[in-house]
Length: 171
Image (cartoon, rainbow, N blue to C red):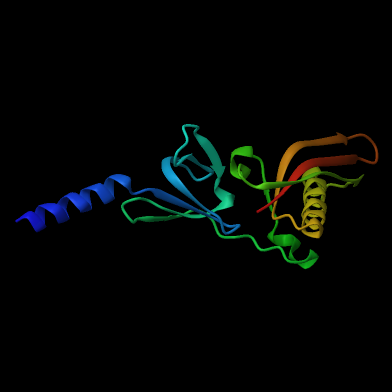
């Protein structure tokens, strides 16, 4: 009977000290307590600390909760060369990139005359493509839009200009 009680107490104590684990795409593993999981971020407290931190979903591969359940967060975005520019994700929410490494800002423009078949959205897509290509060139996998603007002149010989400023991120 003592062995059963000892084993039960051991299992209870192990379970009390079990921790959640956050596996990052850069290979690191964080241990502590997961407080909140959303599609864009995770709120987490590292073991031995009191501060609640936010970690962007794009930085995390998966979370293993202390009960053993694994929650997949995001697939790793592998940008190995400039040919991988289409893999670069453009995001608008800073919460998605917390915990990732910043590679600095870039600004790209696209402009020109347009007809009934070309809209200002056309020039914004061209600016986004330029951002993705430059991001891939710098080894970034995420571009966070910091500012975007579009101007247009609907007069004779219609003209439009689209501009994007992005902060680039990697693991």
